[in-house]
Length: 287
Image 1 (cartoon, rainbow, N blue to C red):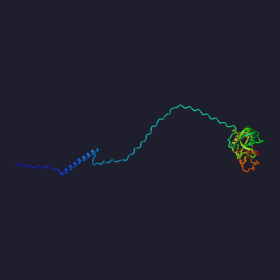
Image 2 (image 1 turned 120 degrees about the horizontal axis):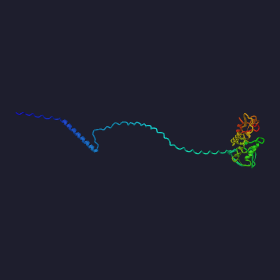
Image 3 (image 1 turned 135 degrees about the horizontal axis):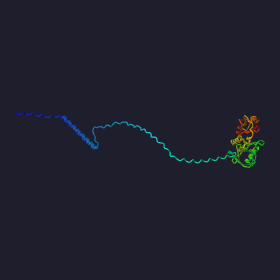
Image 4 (image 1 turned 180 degrees about the vertical axis):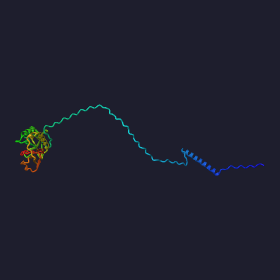
């Protein structure tokens, strides 16, 4: 009796759900691949779906550290090229000194008139060809009975006798004796000042005729310093004070008989101070 065969046991089957999931996953992967290929073909850039690019974190820029310049190495001193010394220029010639006039001069400051001298009367008075007598204003020369009268008269003759002259007028044109008051010029020569400069006249100025007071006082100082003419005579005995009239032009000793009649008095501490003020010594007390 033949033995009956056992039927072969069937192979175990996978569960239907597992097979189906694997198939779906494979299909999805294929679809994704096809989509990626299609997109790459469209713009040339492969695109991975569902992948988000995250930008890297931005950090604050860091300033570079400043560069410290290295000190340049010291340069060796450069010696200038030696040059031959230039010749010294010739010294400029000194200007020749301007010769000072050997006589008194001054600027004319007031109205003038041309005239001719007929004759000289004394050291401070002359007569014109038209008959007028001219008193040289601002000076006073010795009278006939006084020393140096002849010398003063001779000096004025030497300067202007018979000459064409220029008369310059001050504030007052005539004095109480109807004489013309004027400063006398012959060219650059100032005759009034020259007689004073030679020591043959006192400076004798009073208001309002004072246009040339400063020059006449200067010429008188020069004559006094050189002891010319009047200033070579013996000096009178000094006083502790000298008195003058504020409106006059003479100074006195305090004991002079004229002093009590002076209303507005000026006092000078020395004879020189009175002379520098343009005052003339009194003929009575001879200070």
